Length: 317
DNA sequence: ATCATTTGACCTGC
DNA sequence: GCAGGTCAAATGAT
Image 1 (spheres, rainbow, N blue to C red):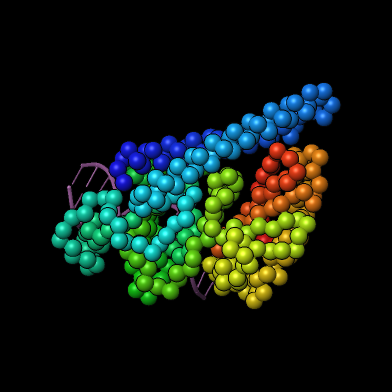
Image 2: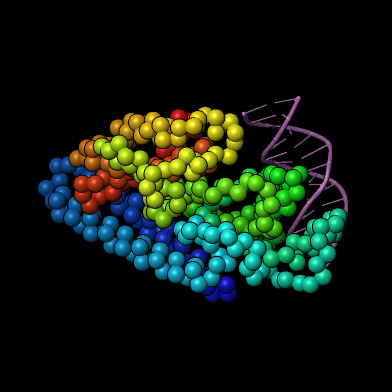
């Protein structure tokens, strides 16, 4: 990917961020509108049109962003569906040099990093990519003035040479990170990535295309993901302890979570922000992280022009 | 007790 | 000499 294209993607992502922020602000503004306002209906209609315009702009930006990404697999953003099948096969974004003396002593290691083909990924947050990593260093990088973290596969002892560096690209909200992967995983920790992070959950519109997004409605008993029913394997967690907590019956646990969500939807904060909304009119979506430490939910009213999203993180269920 | 993270020191390439 | 990458002891979390 050339620099202009990368900048173009970056600019579009920033635009998406800003429009999303505007969407939330307008929604918030509408929610605090006094009920006795004589022109409330007109104001409400105008709010609806503003939100629709923002939503349309977001859709256009996102589809445009996706087409750029698909033309160049070097940079994969969180808003796209990342494929790891081509790991290590891409051209390097760094200079590739000859003399590949790999893996003997510190000299070999550093040389290996330069000679191998890394692949990069731009993300809104250092997310869980399905593998288990162990941090082994952090450095302040002179050029960017932001720190870079170094991770290696937890299963290095079993011969897995995979490493990655996470470099913060900016201080935006949410901040962008550049993740650079080196070497393929040879270990058995190849869980499918369930990508959702505390930071990105604050931007529900950005995660509409996230994989593994479960959704259900408060007045329905159906639990499903985008592809239909949810296999327990997709709930794989990163630690054995959490697996035990989940038990064998993943669906049953989700059912419990549904109740939890309903109680959250009942919360004062939610209903306050969604005047004239019944619980039955709320649909919710849940995103789970494999670490099970973050569960985010967005719920939207189904009755009118105004969507409201609320985020809650649960440390446990 | 075990495992993960932090952080200063060390090493290598430029 | 500097910047970046890694090591490993110290520290913290579970």
